Image 1 (cartoon, rainbow, N blue to C red):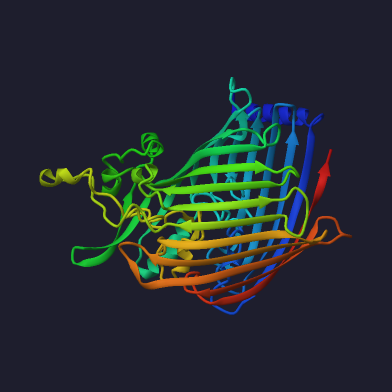
Image 2: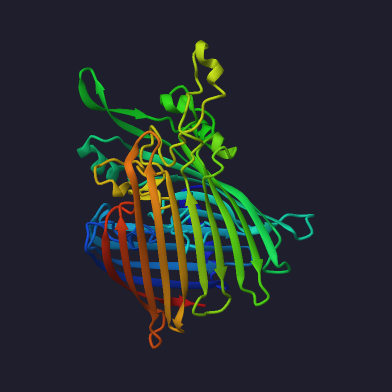
Length: 503
């Protein structure tokens, strides 16, 4: 069957299905502008925005997108979207496509293709500081993902056990940005980099139907692999760049997926340890529904980037959180309190597992210096266009300002409070308060402990006489070195969403 016939059959299927399908086409238009006293936009104004707000002070953007959802029958539905920004010149340039995606749902399964702002963390996207592996701080990475997006009841468990998970492959878009940032400063960088993510979660109980409490446990695993490693090295009596093209075949993907060492054509680091740069986190979450149907939750997010972390040898390093969520709108409709600790990292010592004959007795003894979010080859760690894919408290590479793409502040203690509620039925607020200390890294510690405080305040007014129009006023204040620098700023966001057509 040739390509034209395939296209014709697909179009015929979609067109015929739309005769009885439920469908909705919508739009989103948004503009943003901000001013700040320092070099940086305040911490909580630039984070948790899917990477659209620049770190550089005094910035703006204009955004527009169109989206379509269509249900064909009880088993099939699909979605598509296109979302583009024009902005003040920053690390992305003046124009970029923020979202371009397609989604197909079939029974319990989902297939996603493209870049989509798809928040998959179990932590509150507005009040939490952000978990270690999945956040809403950076631009989405284009990927192909197969998932069971909703918890599925496991048969023969009497309605008490559920499961969900996903598996994806993606491609980073920031290779040219890395080169433009790192090369003028003689720093290492990576281009043509691939991503891999997977997760599995189990839930016991269901507060939506019959239980007062439920317990969720699972893990997320992420990796960077393939890619062209550009390293600035002293070779043949001169400093110059060398390029190593990491293997990216199917067998190499399998090595990455099961955390096996790299092939013979991989870098020395991949051969000695595991293929690619790998990290992940365990999640333990307990939810309890009160009599008035308000919700209380307690959660633990435990980070790992090697076998010692998976075995809890870094047991102190966790994000501990408590959340309250009200069923109804009130002066306090949500609250989150979190404690972040990443100082342990299995201790300061590390031994290469490939020892010579005289040192083989140390193979099972050495460990430590997990050096969170950093990797010898994949220097940018879990970041995209310089913004972290995980917790913003381990300050993103874009804060370095010297061309280096790594995370320089990974041993931290931080406290975080998030509050939200309604001052009026049409006026919502959000308040974020954070305080932290950082020691740098084991191998490259700061000469003194860096401390700091960051705050963010938002007032969101939904205009009553114009449907789906909102105006958001933002303010942020940073004090101390933990969050980069002292800065005070404010911004305004005007958003309008609406339905183009529906039936």
